[in-house]
Image (tube, rainbow, N blue to C red; front, side, top):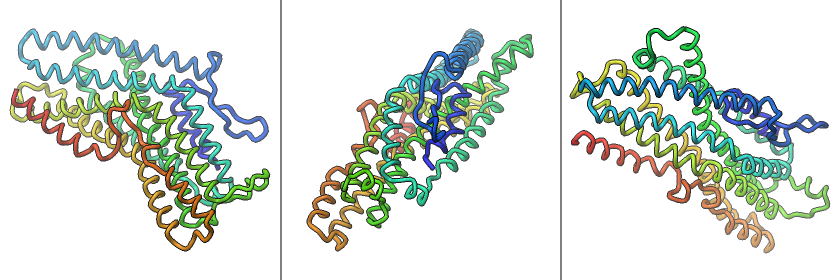
Length: 391
């Protein structure tokens, strides 16, 4: 089964929360997925526009009441200016997630190109080979969906005291319910960004892993489908062609997630530093931090660290598989499995094209994204927190 058929529940979730305005188009004969389509006449596009307008209205209402509350805090002098700036940074983090989601929704051409490359990879592998090596897309979606619900529900409950202090007490129950409902929908949408990135890069890494299995057992990769089309393609040439399609798909994904990654990592890093500072500051100045934020600040600190980890881990998955594939090709080319000179030349040709940089995600070309950033981010967070505490 194609991975796109397994992704139907996730696509429905993204459509429901207003993350993507695209509709899945199926083949009339096979009833299988072909491509994503975009049209102003589709209900998905209308729903996307409706959710976007309501999200802007909800943010404007909450921001208006928040600013009134901040002005009251600053006027009576009981709330430190530094803490106010920290909360402002968290607001910027929320806005960064909203802007990142809208950037992703506009990248229809790159998304369609990536889908076409992956569908071509599935055609080259063949249905039988893919069925023998099933992916864990559905399992990862279910686990990711559970984590999204836990994060959104936890954020909702820990921020209930904050909402009570920000929103006026005379607000009607209908208006309050509407604000909370659209706020929850917006939170689900922003959490789905990280799940989308994880599933997208997992699909690339899964098919690279299938190439790795082929390198370990060269006779497994089906070349019958090519012979039926009159193409007498050698096994290494077939593997190289599949790798090139996967690298092109990864390149399209990188163009989609490059700017949001920079934006999200920066905003989440600022959020982590600011929440850590507030947590430490609250121990030494317990009277200067409102009790309404006693649960929300540690929760935001923990969840933002987890979001950073998910983004870095997702970007590293294809890179790790390409590295393993390269090591395996080197081992096979030096073993007795490649008997003919042609096979050795083809293996060396594929080895030259097996480069981690072809699938590596970069943040707008400024730095490479991956798990290697964890020590640097941790050290920078501690440094900035110490500077804030000494100020």
